[in-house]
Length: 198
Image 1 (cartoon, helix red, strand yellow):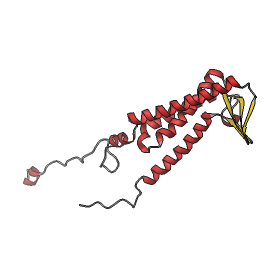
Image 2 (spheres, rainbow, N blue to C red):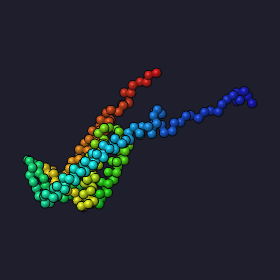
Image 3 (tube, rainbow, N blue to C red):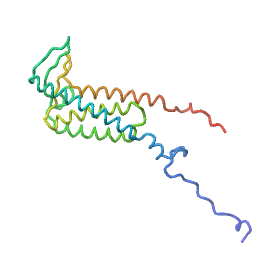
């Protein structure tokens, strides 16, 4: 056997970092931990969602006790309080599909909670945005399960009736969009990363 054969070591297998990011610098688990919801984010989400549910349910109870269905109270200009029942979703859509609306709403709330658990720390606005979305959705869901309809009472001329939960959902969508936009702008861009220095 030649001397070269005796001294040659077997080739070493390439080092593989299990669970690493594509740049092999930061483990994926660590990156996920940086974005996932912590106790503070969960507390903020619960406070916002709980406040939204309480405010919406309280105002609906007041309207249901003080006004008959169909009764109108003029407030100012085109704004009035008009007590109506809505068995559908926004703008009266799917009025005859209460079961389907309940199922879709439940799935949407579950998806938002899962998304929040993985991305809550992406931007400070996310707990407020998803808290309003989840709180508004849950409050209307409570009405559909308990009563079979949602109480709407806020009325603007030439606009469908709505309630506080609907308002919270709209504001939540707007805040969610702003948080995504701000998060995208603050993330590093390709070609703008500073050069590595020795």
